[in-house]
Amino acid sequence: YFDEETVVFHNGKFIKAKDAGTDLYSQSLHYGNSVFDAMRAYDTALGAHVFKAHQHYKRFKESAERMCLTLPYSVEELVSITYALLEENNFSDAYIRPMVYAGANLELTPTEQSGLFIAAWKWDKYLGKDLLDVTVSSYSRPSPKSCHVESKIAGNYASATVALAEAKRNGFDDALMLDVDGNVAEGTGANFFFEIGNRLFTPQCGHIFPGITRQTVLEISQSLGIEVVEGKFRPADLNRVDGAFFAGTAAQITGIRSINGNPMRKKWENTIGYTIFEKYGHIVTQNEYDGYSII
Ligand code: PMP
Image (cartoon, rainbow, N blue to C red; front, side):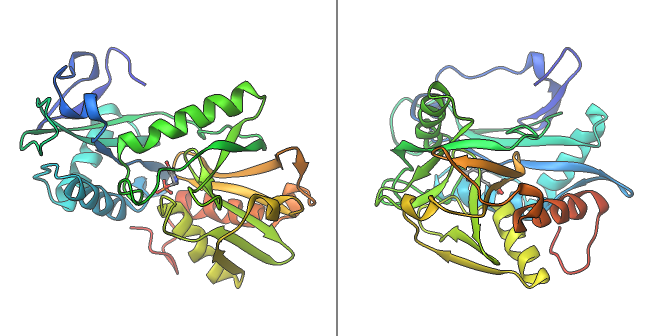
């Protein structure tokens, strides 16, 4: 993620990543209440462009507020720090990770003191370029009754790490997690879509992390006249589907080859998912403003 020269933004300054330190007494390190976000800069004809940066930072600020973390920067300031960070590192194409964490406090009370860092690094498609074999996980997504699942809270990811380890142990590329009621929710780090005939299906909001890429897929589908059904689906609904894919900032659009050993009925190249994959790649890199809220 970094080398000798990599620069990060940490608590108001651009410093070398190798010189940045962690507070051992940070409440977030002990209790997982830090909040992060993830966005990508793409190399476009107009230079580096951070896809939907304002939306990502709006979500970041809302998440921090829900977790009682102090984040004294406006969305505009965070966006301009991010472009400056890209310049510091000479990146036009990068993955960007802002995080706000609680300062020293080993009690569970809200902590006024907080830290902010923003890091950027070169990161290829997170789940790889190939199609994925996925399995339904025995671990469920955190319940919306236990914490804010619509926010990117570090602690929410503990279950994703064990789900992914289980899937890898069993020879799969990723896990498909169910919610606490047994409905299909999402991947360990991306939203999930499947298709039958000429319709797309995706789990409704409530238990999932409502991704910005998911929203973009909904926008693309609308512009192409593709019907998307948002609802509750059981794992058995996935036994015979034409195609499926994950959608997320890191994963972008990644096609799925099989779910629990059941292959997709259509070749990836012949699916709606593939059409969306191509369109998404075009929007993020071509700076195509028409019809999409890309800022
Ligand atoms: N679900 C989970 C659990 C995730 O970690 C992510 C990645 N941030 C997503 C969905 C996709 O969100 P986005 O499209 O905003 O990156």
